[in-house]
Amino acid sequence: MDRLRIERTKYTLEIDLDPVSGKLQLTGESYPENARAFFAPVFSWLDQYLKTNPENVNAELSLDYLNTSSTKCLLDFLEVLEKFRSGGGTVNVTWFYSKDDEDTLTMGQDIAEDTELPIQFVER
Amino acid sequence: METRTESPEREELFSKEMEILEKAKSSLKAAEQASQESLSDFGTVIRQYEKLLKQATKLTRLGDGYQRKMLLAYEEIERQKLVLQENERQLEIRNRFIRETFGRYLSDDVVTGLLEAPEGLALGGEKRTVTIMMTDLRGFSALADGLDPAEVVTLLNGYLEVMTGIIQKWAGTIDEFIGDAILGLFGAPLLRPDDHVRAAACALEMQLAIPGVNAMNKEKGLPAIEMGIGLHTGEVVVGNIGSKLRAKYGVVGRAVNFASRVESYTVGGQVLISRELREALGPLAIIGSEMQVHPKGMQPVTIYDLVGLSGDNGIRLEQKNVSREKMKTELPATFIVVEGKDARGDEHHATFVAVSEELLEAEVNSDIPLKPLSNLRFRLQAAPSTDVYAKVLAGEAGHGTFIIRFTSLPETAKNIIAAAR
Image (cartoon, each protein chain N blue to C red):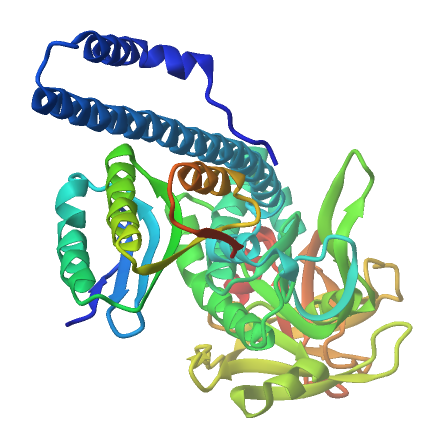
């Protein structure tokens, strides 16, 4: 299975999904014109990847800004991982935030409240 | 760190949905008669709806959070914009100060250089080596006496306009105009490695521009002028000099006075330079002659007649072949040696025996020996109230006969000499 890499742009995230290491990185800011279209290859890749029943999935999220559509896509992304975890898979999520960016930390904590996924908060 | 709690406002936002959900739940309880299968389907729909509502609530909360973050970022940008505007205002004030202080006297590129690299500007006062240019119009005071005030101003402005352009072209600084004299600087406020070369090239070009100025004067019915330029490289103090009410960027030091001394030895059309500048120019300098002078209160020094520059700034003065012809009628006169501005020395007798075609130079017999570059004031016997000023030319003076270069030859005297040729 190929690694999926999407370069960061002014309006979209940098995506780096590595099937070998199991590291799924989402970095940057996201306010694309069509969030669903942007995330479509990500969901498609994730669907294929989880079918391979990977041993360890580590999601590393370093998100500075998401518009509402992108937030919806992120929640869906986490829901897919949550389902995989409830089926017996191992998933870890790391939520990175800047020291002076309390809002990003608060939003990560908000997400963590309603998910079974273990989320670790790490200062960048 | 603050912990988030569900706000009543947000609950209210989805109250309609919650009401529907509660209604569905109570309907489910009431539907005792319904089949088990239908009840199960109904329960699934409620759970899915519950989940959707939960996600919609979270999405709204997160969306609000990001919007708040965006707003804070926007506020920060606005704050930075204000800081930037203030910085720009301060910069504009500083730039305006520099332009107002130097704009009249400096070329645009020098002012731009100052604005871009203000560290080159030391307003507080600083010792540095500069090349000083002192120019003067030969015999201008006497010339001005024969003109009305408007003509004097027209003549001066026309001349200074042309010279200013040339000095700015060579990135020099006009420190001040002193009547018909110009005090120019190369090396202040901006110091450049080729200051001395540009100063020399500038002086030569200024001399070359004089025929053009004279052609302009002739068109306006004004007399021709001649300029002498003295250049010296030396250490001076540069800075803003004056009082709080009136200060001006300028230079002070012995080197300034010495440049003025060097200039005082010039005749019209000449650029004289000091030994220091001669050495700085090295092989670039084309020297016509050198002469020993003994300025008052100083040791004798050698100064050089710069006639050209070689190299990239190659420029050369036109050589004038001045031939003097014997006069048909020799003209008796008296003269005194002028020391500085003092014209009260002993009176001697002299006779004009030969004169050049354009009345630039003359050969005079005298009863005393005269040092080269001595300044003389003559009075022709035929016009005893008219002062004629001249300088003894270097290397050509001797006992008995000497060559003079007129520095001021009023019309009355000129007519008498021309008639005697």
